[in-house]
Length: 252
Image (cartoon, rainbow, N blue to C red; front, side, top):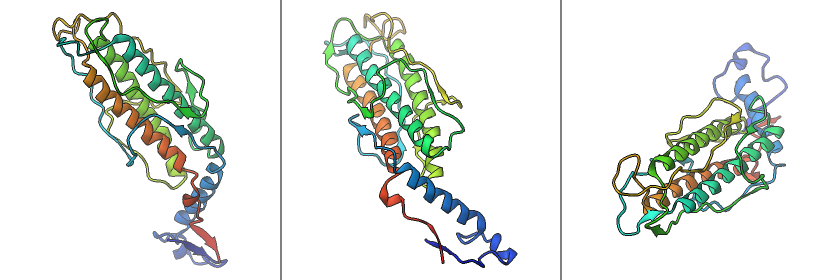
């Protein structure tokens, strides 16, 4: 609905306190959000090659890797899974940088995000996140170590959602629903996420010391990470879209 404000709109006190879009507060918020979308439209969109599935506004639950015993060369290789984690942390760095670019135009965060994640410098493109793992029977990733890395990734994603949603509110866009299970740090600073999974596991049994990650399980979980990245990138790119830049409050 477009709110139309005349010169005498708020001459009567009752108009000021209207609860619909013609009230003073909703009208002022509409103006601020229209201006925010215009400002956000000057930021170049992220190129998203993450491989995530089509965004729908909700980040799905990201469960842990299931500790498993080795079957017939069906484990995720330690080096390959760690490389996949590195792809994911690089994607997080791209999202942090994009949020800072938008926040410079729409200062909704109260400060600049601090990126302490070690990885490739952001360049505006999210690279593909590995979601397909070849089963092996040696040099296998430890489920215990992999789940420690995954927990940090999940928490960082939840932290990104918090800041993305502040920008979304400022631009009058719907917020992302976060079902990831991550526990965000209520901070502007992002902690580093070491990708190492520790000593290679034997796969002899499902104890913490020996359990491995199945290759198929690694692919399924990392697909959910890619999907979460897709949700965040899609939302950030939408904040300055021309279709969202239509003024919601106009003078008459």
